[in-house]
Length: 132
Image 1 (tube, rainbow, N blue to C red):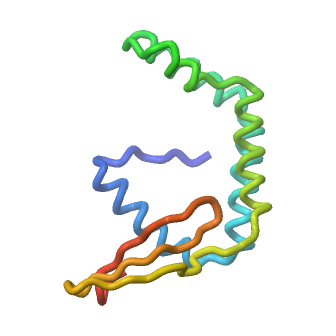
Image 2 (image 1 turned 90 degrees about the horizontal axis):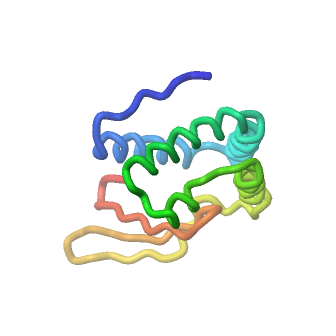
């Protein structure tokens, strides 16, 4: 598996997400569905590795004094990982409506805003005239 380098800052993460969103918007639903199904399969295939990494995270959490309630929320077991994979598959089963603009509005400054429908949530996106 390819490793992912840690970004240098939150700004880097945001810029990478913005660039990825543009590419994803132009990707077909079939490709998106295949990627989601691959994610679900990877979760199921790598349960031991995921649980091992989670055990290390939980130990670090105990050492740093995280509350028992938060520790419980962070704790994974085989059933929770299976539920995560099932949840990803449920997203694939939803009707495809990627990127349909539901509402639009304008401002005196030239900015526009819109609410777009995506598969798993409602997402507000704002753009400036001439830029996306």
